[in-house]
Length: 490
Ligand SMILES: Cc1ncc(COP(=O)(O)O)c(C=O)c1O
Picture (cartoon, rainbow, N blue to C red):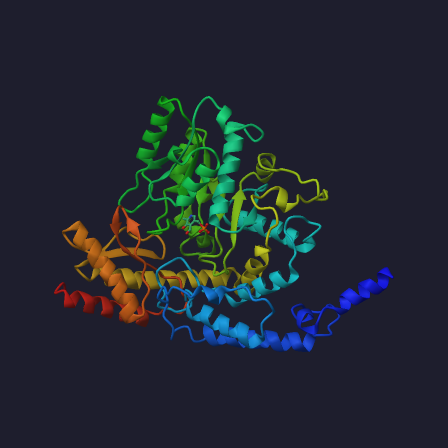
């Protein structure tokens, strides 16, 4: 009776519903194969035509019925019609004239890695639920730690984005230095404080807000004219805080700041951290990729002295978002200062379940797309991509230097270039650069971003797309010259 009922209920699933899944016995393989090919063809029509589309579509308010959840499943055609609009109205970083942010075009292996990871749908929460992929993550993190020059015993974990990576590093720093893994910050008699440069990424402040340290207890250290942390001011600020009775516990240096790509003096900051017995974290979310560059690796010398390093392969390693990691000099120290065991996860002898030692619980297998991308390009391939970016940077910077109305915000340490049209009046300068940014996007098909830097509007480009060529840079400057000419500025 019960069996009959079960069969009857199973029988109620129509083929339309069943074809939303890949049948494990292969019975609908042909249908699924056709479906996947259709979607893949539509995707590649978009990807291989991205130079024809704006790098950044205009922000149109979408009729909300477009997002309506349907009562019944829709046909392939209806779904593809919806997707067409998604393609047309999405950021288009594949366009080599998309220059405005640290958004790379994902390598094909990283796209495939995402596809396969989603299909496998393992859960990086535990070894039991991702037997090989957990080991892969462990192993790759040890290799990355070693590429950064960290000693034996170092390692790390992967997370969904750099903010989480910085958060985990600072939580471990706080628990280790203030000995409060099982206590709480509010019971401390003295206020803990963290130091970072005034141009560091907001995720440092956000992390301290989340950690109960308080965003106002992130002490902002002055930066020099190249947007690098001033070590004299760092010492001054540490002394000040100690005199106030507060407890400094960490310094966050940046290797590749968000707006100007600047690299803090890592060796000097490391020495200061040692002198005051502070945790030394390096936010190498962007510049960490330099470990693959024979020619430019020296720019991050001193990173090997860090207690922790955060790094986003989703940026300069051309891995699809999201893909981030946080590495620790003393991996078992991190475990002691972070691990919360979960009773529903089986204990393993040699491996710690990743869900117990990361901010996330259920965890996506970000590692697969990273690994496939590394297999496809190798260390040498990445080195060549980075060198190509530096060649483009040099061409770009030379063009700025040869125009008397353009100025740099900082000498770029990486491939991030922040510049603007000069003007004696600050408000006029802001307006002028905003107008130029809009002109380049709407009339010339170039996306250059417009960040605020030291309170003013600047233009910013990131020379990261392998298909951005010297000819495209020439074209951009012809447009800038034309804009300036119309204002009688050149
Ligand atoms: C230097 C730096 N640190 C941290 C982050 C935060 O990374 P995410 O946006 O992946 O959270 C960014 C983002 O651009 C960054 O540039």
